[in-house]
Amino acid sequence: MSKKIYDVAIIGAGVVGTAIARELSKHNISIAVLDAHSDVGDGTSKANTAILHTGFDMVPGSLESKLVARGYHLLRDYARETGIAIEELGALLVAWSQEEHDNLAKLQAKAVENGYKDSVIISAADVYAREPHLGPGALGALYVPGEWIIDPWTPIVAFATQAKLNGADILLGTAVIGVTIGAHNTLHTTNGDVEAHHVINAAGLYSDEIDGVFGVKDFTVIPRRGELMVFDKLSRTLISHIILPVPSSMGKGVLVSPTVFGNIMLGPTAQNLEDKTDSGSSEDGMKFLREKGSKIAPELLDEEITAIYAGLRASTEHSDFQIRLHENKYITVGGIRSTGLTASMAIAEHVKELLVNSGLSLGAERALPAITMPNLGEAFTRPYQDEKAIADKSGYGEIICHCERATRQEVLDALESPLPPTTLGGLGRRTRAGLGRCQGFYCHSELRKLLEKK
Ligand SMILES: Cc1cc2nc3c(=O)[nH]c(=O)nc-3n(C[C@H](O)[C@H](O)[C@H](O)COP(=O)(O)OP(=O)(O)OC[C@H]3O[C@@H](n4cnc5c(N)ncnc54)[C@H](O)[C@@H]3O)c2cc1C
Image 1 (cartoon, rainbow, N blue to C red):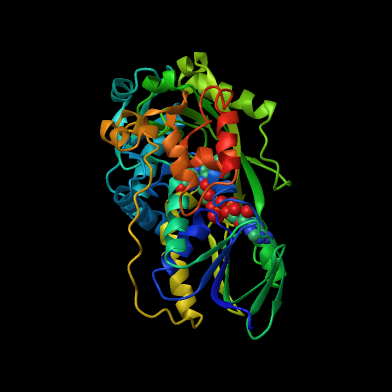
Image 2: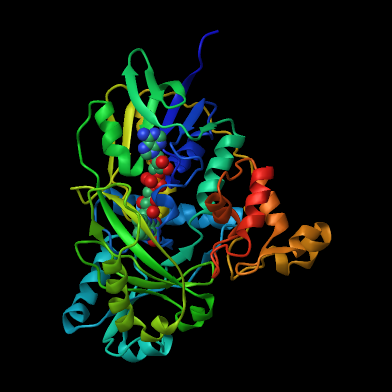
């Protein structure tokens, strides 16, 4: 029997790879998505600050500026359509020195250049009226009402689920280790060979190494670690906007922001590393964040910390996204550094255009299966609060994780979903179970039992 040759193979099932898979699965073509990990979204995409960026502070004219602006609208609409939690908080870009204050007008002008016209400069009095718990010394702020917060995990599961329901094969635990380029591409993986006409490299931190396998050398990924602190839910009333610093060349700087899960986060740091696996937290990073936090919102530091985590941005020597069509029907989607969650759906559209340019005939678009994702947002009704859901299935009334108020039925739903989790981490990203103040001390053994039973 001859082996299946996929029309397209996508290496990487992060937010970018799964968004591409979803976009392509609108067409009647065969698609494989390969990831070394045992779950989707288990790389950089699981550890970010979850801001839906307007793109107001991008480099005007860059590909990133274009795709973030477009991706913002696409993801916003998609979240509303599928029930993914979003909160329309708005951001305050706070000036703490005269120099930063002088810069606000330039940032506002840059926002307009990026197509974002709604930002306004507000006085110190306005800043404190909006955010009474900020530390002393704020001189004013640029208010950017369109910057919102989003559940960062559910979009990935939603993208992959729709792609899978429309026929894509999601091949997890499948690391690409080599390629043979011939009449078509043969990807050598830890799970045997996968053959495909077109290959898309969405391998995040490893996109330069996959490029190397294809004989391409356009950039080097420099892992840039971002460490974050997550404060207990009791701190949530302290801050009601995303509090941003005036940006520097190392990125967006340290922010304080509510999360849709009902916490406050402080971070991220920005430290270039050599090791692409070093996503641990450091003493220096925590010290740095405490210093920054004590200036921005001193009362926050009296609150308890629920979790600390770190993510690695796939930065490169270039400031823009590195998305290129190469020979051999091979496309690189690299350098998706700090805005990949927001830009993901627009990146997918852009890659689709490149695929067409490389000779792939897509045919007509067909509908994607409609899906409704579980709401993980604290601002919206959760199953344990929903009498109708509980009357329908009593498991929604049985709380299994008391810190996050995740119920047994939500866990069962996740385990029975088209793309079930295989680890406690994956289960947590689908239900919030085990991610709260006790970090699974009380519920992990029960969750593990359910996971193993499945
Ligand atoms: C601290 C931090 C804060 C951020 N904040 C925001 C934010 O607020 N808003 C926003 O929009 N963006 C934010 N981002 C950026 C965003 O998280 C990333 O741009 C995005 O997650 C990148 O997704 P990806 O799919 O390209 O990479 P990944 O999620 O890393 O996916 C790549 C996948 O490729 C797989 N892979 C790699 N090599 C191989 C191989 N050889 N074979 C098979 N599979 C392979 C990996 O296992 C991985 O799952 C932030 C990032 C960080 C680190």
